[in-house]
Image 1 (tube, rainbow, N blue to C red):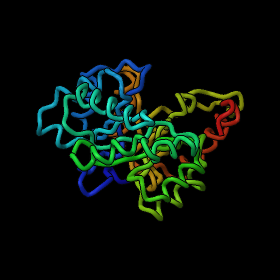
Image 2: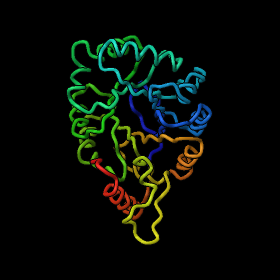
Image 3: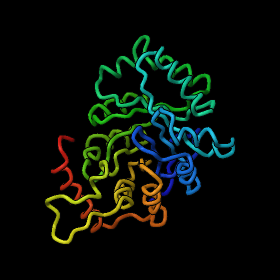
Image 4: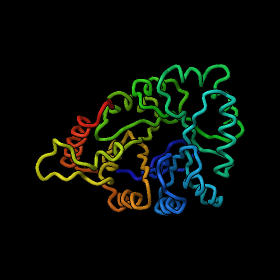
Length: 273
């Protein structure tokens, strides 16, 4: 199982286990530095002041150069994008964000708004020319839409849900990203923690595997460039980083057991396709 992936020629190779922040986590700057010290260098920022933005702002130039900083970008219009980009560069105390991903584009109308006259893409294209952004991606839950937009040639990266309970990307997305050579970043690798919890259908004596095994499942798929972890605190971060000490691909028996529990979680997980 490869440890690193290359997302683009102008970006440093990234460790395939990445770190994400989200609004309801409490990982502080010390935790982010801890992850970086262990070799994690793909950082996906939620766009709000938090431990990740603080840690990035504290980095010296040499350390910053070895990281890929990605940001979930919410703007849909050019004016919104200018405000969001300026505020983000200030919060991160940096002159460049390596990757912005259009955040949760769930309908084609949103994409059309972004790309059309007065859309946010106008601002981002100008920012790329000025060196403030290097690459542009997309985050979505909608697999057919992800595949459609990955085929347009307008995206350098795709961020989609993929885990043992939600494996539809194997049929709907990966064939397109392979053909177009679009790197994939996987989020929700633990299915919000459900994969590490029991279900009513578990066989007798079954103990759900811990978090590192679910990241191993995602990373065993060579079509995933980066699997994002989003630990709530230092304890969860250390649990996740245990993967670094056992960076091995699950064997077929392990994969079958992980898929089987993923299927059980999917059955009991509510209305998520």
